[in-house]
Image (cartoon, rainbow, N blue to C red; front, top):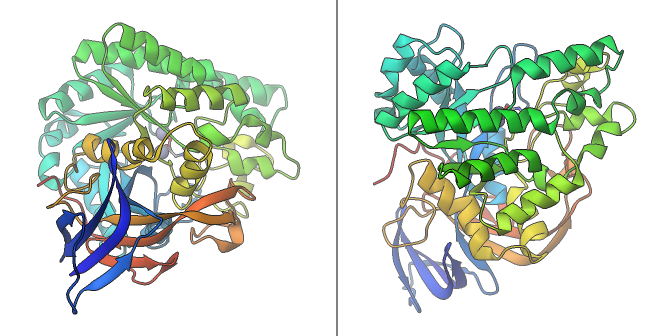
Length: 454
Ligand code: URP
Ligand code: ZN
Ligand code: ZN
């Protein structure tokens, strides 16, 4: 057995001093004082928080856009996850036009299986809605897929309102989750044309072509589609105050909406697009970075419990070669940025240490709620007897600086270069195996597919 001693155990509701025993891949005992036997391995968590393994509900590993391929695949992406304390990721298996959902699932399984250092599960991103896909939805839970995504933007991924409505009605039958990328693609295309016609081709034209109202309009429309379908929706990567206000309006109408945001929309703002030497391309993500006021409004919304989960939307493209495809034309910059490695440290440093939230709320946003939303609770997202032994011993004392040269993410920059951080995932367990010790990976490839709750 492995025994974690002297830690402060965190749940979404409370913090308590207790020891944890791990037998095989499960938590077998939690009590005030577990006495180790000679053969037991003991891990000292004195002075540390002990969290259920963090879950990143939004990653894109090993993904191709047609012009660029993500820098991180499941090997590097899940190693980066685990070193930060993320023990499960939910990646977007993305259907290509003409493909069935099962084909997309099989392709993603092949990308991840036997290559992952943290556990993995998939959302199914639907990009080609048709009768065959409609029939397939009811079979997806058997494969462990209970959450889906549709896009209201991107010409190659977009679904129209009728398709979103039909999909949501079908997902309602399996009590699944539909996450939606909320940006009005038609308006973005028009605004993009205007920018190009005006000769604006640099990264700063990217946020100008997709302003906050474009997100707000899509959220408002989606909320009404959700009302029509009689089933809740999940807003992924909320970026703006304007969008948040539409969520508030929908909730005032008693609409159930769940909301995800990401560290970049809390800690980074749109001044990065004006950096010299095309550096702004590093921040070309969709939705784009907003104003400092938006950052503040979203942090306050986290405090006020208006936001349910914090994920990363990790979608890494190298600056050299990939982002540089758009040197003359911002439309050609592949959209996305890395983040999976640093989310727990960033949220601990800038939200917990700054006094906005406590460690229990951090646990809720990054472990408990994503486990509940994406069909993994109570195997994951909580420390209790019978739960999976995905555990993070998090030391609050560590101090450091994020820098590209030290990261595990296989990408040639980090948007958080130079950010000071406090706290570190000192020891990490995945499925009962100790995979990180003193902040170093000691065992790779321990991740398994998460089929569903017990
Ligand atoms: O720019 C981003 N976020 N790329 C990833 C795809 C998406 O929309 O989530
Ligand atoms: Zn998206
Ligand atoms: Zn995404």
